Image (cartoon, rainbow, N blue to C red; front, side):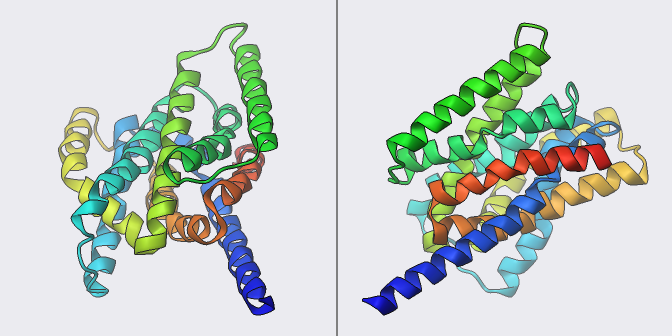
Length: 267
């Protein structure tokens, strides 16, 4: 019995470490997105990053000779894509054309609560009553912040970020549960590859309509959200969610708004 306890603790600690690595990587996403959308179209940044990330994802799947996931998993992969490929990236990019990254980071601080809620709804996890009360308190605090910053009324960008958070929580929870069957890196790779046919016409249309003229700094920010936020970060994040528990590991993102605001002040 003691050996099993040691193994469980080892797996749990591993999840915490992988989750911490992912959170540090994700904490730069909003400042980098804000920099990228200052010169590039929001759709190009929000959806184009997944299309770029699909290139190494395809190479990795081919090199690993990974079999196509069974048909029964594709509806869940589609839900993951809705959250982490389409929903959160696109809506947050649009919102950050209208608000500073630090403001968006505070509202995005609800991601742990959204992830836990989706883990209960989709993943079968059951957080405690105390957790739900704390989540409700956090939601009230974020809404009050949005009202104060919006001079007494919510702004359209606040709604975009809140919807992005809901969809992001769905993508995190569904992907974390799938990672227990497929492995974290396979989940994000298959999601990116399967999404590319839908992304390509939209991104090309917006790129032709708005142009791709931007400074090296903006392109560097776009490269970051493509290869770290949209690709490598999920290797660590889905592994952490699968091994440490979706609701539990999701709480590591409580540190993400603080890190994001620090990056925003130094960038």
